[in-house]
Image 1 (cartoon, rainbow, N blue to C red):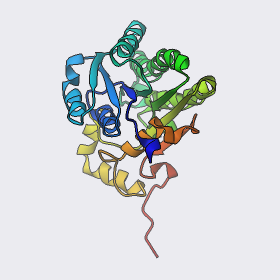
Image 2 (image 1 turned 180 degrees about the horizontal axis):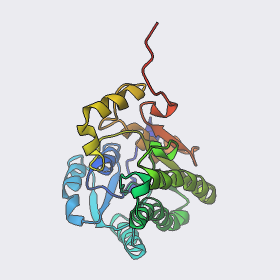
Image 3 (image 1 turned 30 degrees about the horizontal axis):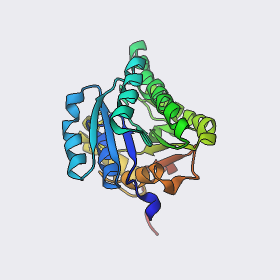
Amino acid sequence: MSNFDLAGKVALVTGASRGLGKGFARALAEAGADVVVTSRDRDALQETVAEVEALGRRAWPVSLDVRDQESIERCVEQAWELAGAIDILINNAGCNVRKPALEVTWEDWNLILETNLRGVFFVAQACARRMIARKYGRIVNIGSVTSVNGYAGLAPYGASRGGTKQMTMSLADDWGPHGITVNCLAPGWFKTAQNVVMYEDEEWVDYLTDRIPLKRPGAPGDLDGALVFLSSDASAYLTGQTLLVDGGISVGAVRAVPRR
C-alpha cells in the first residue's frame, strides 16, 4: 500500500476553489501530498487552503486564468518557486454553457474550448517542461463521461472533453520516455456548481438514476480513490488511459430491467 502514499509529493490542482477541484485538493492532502491550489480569484481559495492545512499538509494559493498563456506560465513558475517542485498536476479547471446546439454562439464555443481544452494543454505543457528535467511526473487531466458519450445540449462541452481524452493519449506518448504518465479521470454525473440547477428537477434526477447501474449520482469522495491511484506510484505503468468513474452510466443502460 506504500505505492499509494503521496507523502513528500507536491500536487498542483487547477480550479480548486470549489466543487470537484476542492475535493481533489483535500483527497491529495489526505494521501500525504502538499498542494498548490489555483483559481482566477486567489481569495476564493482560502477555504480550500484551510482544509488542506487542517490535514497537516502545506498549501499555497496561486491565481491562474487558463485562458491566458502568460497567466499559465506565471502560475507554474510561482508554484515551483513556492513548493520547490511539482510532482503531480491535476488539470481540473473547466467551464460549461448548457444550450441546444442551434443556440450556441461563437463566444460560447470559444469560452468552453479555450478553457477546457486549450487551457488543459498549455498547463500540462508548462508543468511537463519542468517535470522532464526531473524524469518524473503524474499528470491527471479531468475529463467527463462526455469524453466518450454524447448528450444533447452539450456539443461544445462534449467536444472539449472528447478532445481531452485524445490529447491525453498523445501527451502520454510524447512524455512517457521522460518518466511522466498522463491519464484522464472522467467523472460521471456529480452535482456541482455548474449543473446544480439540473438536480432541482426531481423527474430528471429519477431518470438519471435509473440509467446508472449503481442507482445514484456521484457523491463527494467517490473520485478520491481513482484520483490518488492515478497520482501515485501505484499507477506507474498506466498511461494514456481514460478512467471512467461514473457509476456505470457509460455502459449505455436506458431503463431499469425488472429482475426475474
